[in-house]
Image (cartoon, rainbow, N blue to C red; front, side):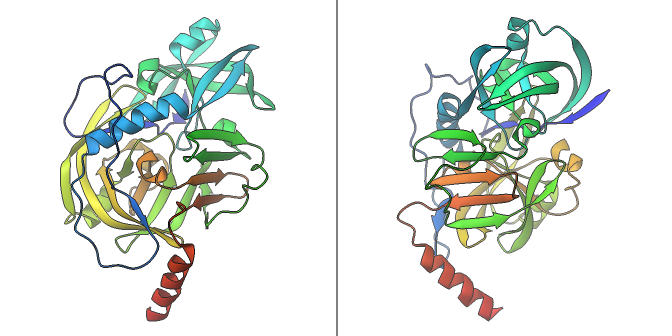
Length: 337
């Protein structure tokens, strides 16, 4: 029996709703949750937030644009989502059947809300950019549970690579090296590796030290139960319902944290849902505050790069945020401490 951890989650806050697709969902302008700020200010009144509208808007955008092309056995290209929170590369059952990958075994798939036994298969001649590899153990899941994509690109295919999310252009790339002119970023945060996962240990949320996983496979941000205990008095929203790649849903409390600090940048009004996820347990993150930082917060930056080779996460601020103000604030705060 093979054990595989996969943390991909689709997050929709609020009560259960009808299935979402491009024909039934109209474009929605995301509210001002997760505003990037560059200097210390008095906490403003928390804006009225419609998390459901925000998540629907990101769902549509994500599956239209945030995929990368791969070929398998000379066929394709196929659209794969990039999930920096997933240890394993995943294929949809339909794609595996189409490619006649019938040599299958059983494995235990650990997802955001569940642990299930699934079929796996070996995928030879898996081509991503200039790299050709063999995926030894790829779990097979229902394509509907990964938004209709052909598969998920996990950490087994991303080691020594750089994932570049360019939100200004609305694109995602997996690269051997960053493009010329794209090597300078406003914020560089170092991370530690655990089971292939990059974990930022120097972040704080409302003054609480928190371990952060940057997860391009999660629509919204998810905290563990220890973080919920520490943030229990924060403003509550409607409970969130999370559906993982196994198709299992779980509900959890949702709160607004006033401020998340990543290096020299602060993110205001972070919407966090909480669940006792097997993902945290698999990474030994149950006993201290931990946060899966999802696309709802990542997309407020102009660019985000995740460099697995050098264990760094790099952020570009929006053009109207003055970096020098953030730096002056940090220095002033350090002197006060």
